[in-house]
Image (cartoon, rainbow, N blue to C red):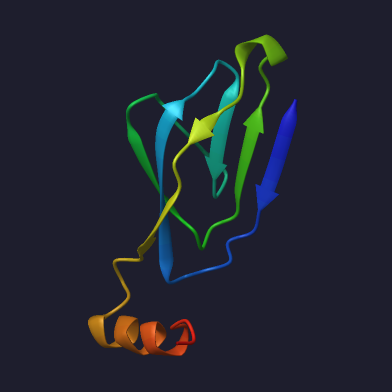
Length: 92
């Protein structure tokens, strides 16, 4: 069994979790609410909430595979996005 608890660290992003391989026994709980993961479907998570991931399946079921994409939270205004892009821009 594998469990990972991640505190909500960013009120400015949402995380997209497209399920590539979701074996039996995998679960995602966000803000105390269980979420339904399914292969071939995308799950959008508000990163400002505590979320936990667990793989309660057997090793024979294989790993959980998701493609994680960070997106701007819909409540972040365009001007705020531009300011954050400037602040966190990589050095030339």
